[in-house]
Image 1 (cartoon, rainbow, N blue to C red):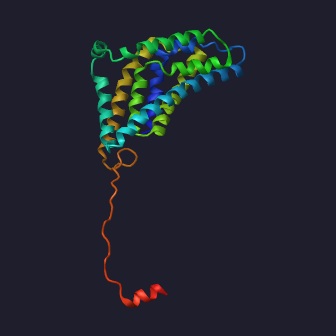
Image 2 (image 1 turned 120 degrees about the horizontal axis):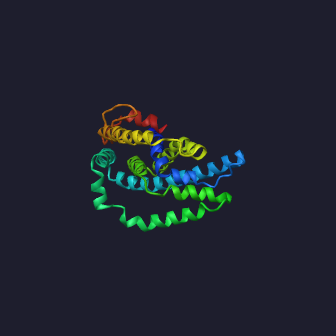
Image 3 (image 1 turned 120 degrees about the vertical axis):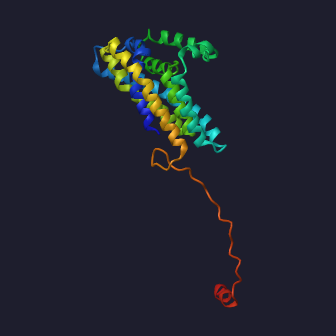
Length: 245
């Protein structure tokens, strides 16, 4: 299911340009030197992917802990259902309960640190900006986090989130070079299409959890069997003599 991370990244990058685009537009890149500019943009993306990988590692650990109870198939189904709920539950409901309140203070600190870094031009600035950018709240990142949990592995979870970040690179790089090149109508159409793709990927997670025996999509669960039978037939004296020799 790692390919779903790239799909999230590629499609989510349209959303990212709207949400994180202002940060990309304000990057203090050296526009007079293309080689230096490329290096600065590379550090920015590397910082983002590093942040995503750390998030994936953390939530992959959560998935691994749940998998110890032997519920990986059920976990995949639950993740798919959660994705569907996020799409179909009205936004007003989420705003009413505001699940993000406990982390508002941490987010404000990240934004404050980002503001300070955007005023600098030292080489490490771009790595720091990208790293902090990766921890900003984003609906598509939350969807990718669900995938990291479903991986039930710290390394696969980390790789899942890293692939998600890589998928956002082409469009985010275009935004840095070209500025706000997507008009409002295009962004609106993409935002409408994103929930459809989330539903498709959610269904893939559910199908995966059902273990239908479809290669690469819904493999059958591996069941280990232990053969407790033991041959207790008496050994003939002739065979015993040969073995001793």
